[in-house]
Image (cartoon, rainbow, N blue to C red; front, side):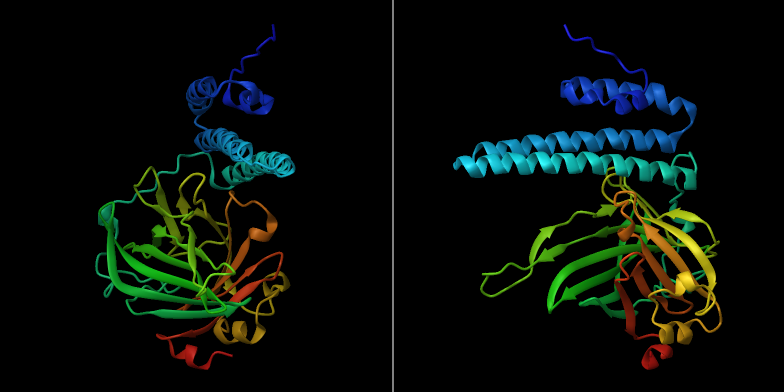
Length: 356
């Protein structure tokens, strides 16, 4: 009889990879017990969370593999069926590696944000309900109704509008911002973002409704087809939590969770500088349109951030974003590839009429 070695903590369980051959019901029951008893008692809440997410990730891999097997079984052609099983196996191995990479990225993030529970205060009394007259408007995230930004780059055209609409989320009035991305005249993303204006000047991310589209050859006429709503989340729904998307007083080195929907939306911001001016820091100047940066950052008061997600730990997924006082984001770029989009217009600041 095969000897079964029972782990004593969730870390032991994941490190030994003993879950691979255990029945699913036993995995779920034992893991739940270990996560509560073996991990959380040490007040390492961030670490306990990442371990739970790792177990969930591996469970999703197992479930997806089973679904792939069901598909392959029903392929009639022998060669095609064999190829289907090979593809499913390769996909499974890639997903397992991805789970490991995400766990490492979340562990690194715990080192940045600390081990405390992520449970921000979202009390309605902390927020404004009148977006026409906010207590302390954030100059780097202006949310005045009617504001519009236009961006272009890498074959994309992006239009962002602050709508005259609000959404009540967990008792907080959130303004609705629409973000439309098109490529070649076809919509590829249509998102409704929900932001709240805190009385202390912080801008909070309350959630988003994401719709991603694709076009397919052969369609007559060719039209954008909805393919996924992955990444959508809402403060207070299914345990989702928002976060500060831009602070009133950004501090260099600060790391902020912008959203917390485990395994779905986990964007994080790191403040790199609050006094950017072109020509001072070669690393931050890389890929930036020089004339645009010199035009908007001549007072050395632009803010640069690095935004990333432990769900996508690959270096090419990290974005650097540049914000000008009074306008907001004017340039964003992927740090590795150099692919970026730049501001080409806005309707609320006279500087936008003469952008270089």
